[in-house]
Image (tube, rainbow, N blue to C red; front, side, top):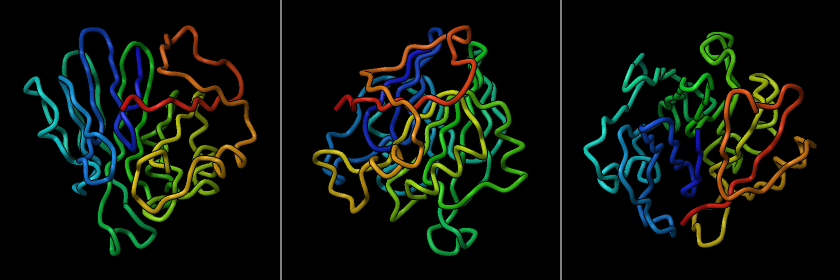
Amino acid sequence: MEITWLGHACFKIKTGDKTIITDPFDASIGLKEPKGEADIVTVSHHHFDHANTKAITGSPTTLEGPGEYEIGGISITGVPAYHDKEKGLTRGRNTLFVFDAEGIRVCHLGDLGHKLSDEELEELDGVDILLVPVGGTYTIDGKEAAEVVAQIEPSIIIPMHYKIEKLNLDIADASKFTHEMGAKSEALDKLIIKAATLPEEGEKVVLLKPKL
């Protein structure tokens, strides 16, 4: 499996001969909009910085909400959650997407705005790689993200949705999150991983360099 960060909450996940792209954004956030072909596109919620599906080519299947899906040998679960701490009253609903492929379980938390309930955690049981927002303002912040990581206990954590060069959204960088985690972090251009090479003990923070 190969995971590349395209900026913000947008990732390209390649597994076998299939490509997944998550939460494609539009150029109004200051970053060059993501391009490329995909077989599957997921949209955690319909805000401009997460739902620019027209930027993605290849006639992909688009998943936009909760449910259980099986596409090209990939099992995908959309778990209902919220964009805020008021059960959606402020910013609406948010879908957490879990991808099962190659013996690896990957979870993209979208714009999660709260700690997870027991019911949500049950759906996320066994997650190996967690893609977690850490920038605050519109999502959980660095401290809250570390608390969510502790709830899920993944092997690899990849922060997203934080301030990077040219991004014009009023969110924080990843420093608070990495400080809260206190775990060894590694900067990579992309994550290439197999089930057999997942860390056996502890948690590893991977800071992906955005491919813009």
